[in-house]
Length: 184
Image 1: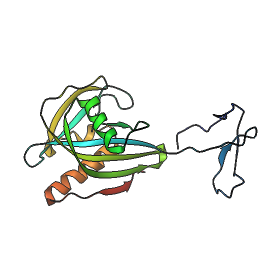
Image 2: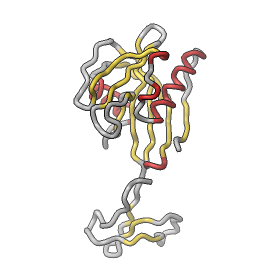
Image 3: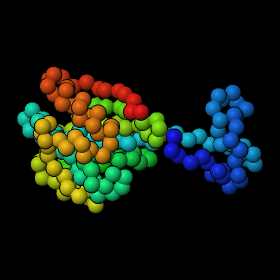
């Protein structure tokens, strides 16, 4: 995992020790010797949508990233879930923030674990209510692509590629499922 280990207690500021807790836990945790707080590091959730346009959902909305990582690469509208929001609300918020797109949220579509960076990516299918977009500062351009126009070699993240592959395969089959997987 790429996250740095916890060095100081968030409760009292003392330097922590990395060891097994005394409660039977089987993982090394950051434990404060001063106040006894056990600190856990958990994955971050990335939430987003697969916004589609057309009577048969033949076009997908992608955003050209204006921020690092992967500035200048294409992605689905997505970002980190905020405290106090559901995964669905976060996906809608990210779609509005990044693409300025108005959507009708449909079902959960992919759940992809990216353990090496401590993230879980959740994408929902969404129907675009308009083909007019107003990208936010994180996006250079928001554009619709049919399957044969997708810039496959210019996609920002593997989770986006896998999600798009599932979308177009399910669309050809005429039935959408929920896809769960791991990205190495």
